[in-house]
Image 1 (cartoon, rainbow, N blue to C red):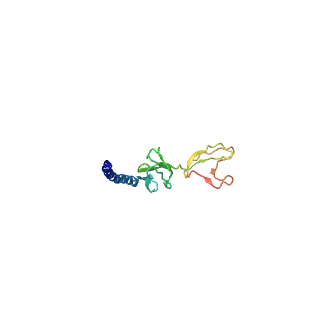
Image 2 (cartoon, rainbow, N blue to C red; image 1 turned 90 degrees about the horizontal axis):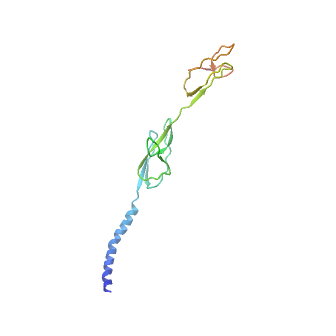
Image 3 (cartoon, rainbow, N blue to C red; image 1 turned 135 degrees about the vertical axis):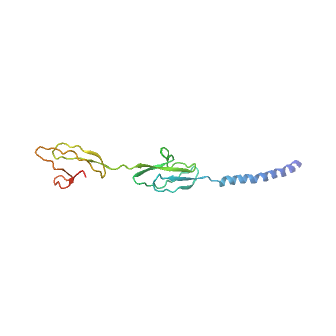
Length: 165
């Protein structure tokens, strides 16, 4: 019994000395939350705000796509230039990161100009004519007994001349 009386105060002293450390460690671990920032570099497009305070391993709702005249937005990527690593709404955020907009140049509208010689010799079409571009007119078709008088966009009335201008 005598040993019990001597051991008990020592045990309680050790327990009280360790207790504050244990509770401090528990609270310190609970209060530390790692958060990150996702920065959007639109590569010359409209501004996009960063998303701050993203919890570790969380995903983000992607912002509205930026715009850029003459281009179509093709997504966000973690690698600028090669655009091989997509950053999507399913990508877990594990660090502060900058993602880059990928753009595809809009292709200009092109047209085919066809020529109906109204019974004259065949005239080949001119393909891939850019919008608002001019064309070089083909050689005049031939038709026995007729003289070629020009190209027109209205068949029958021949009031709207089609010229190279």
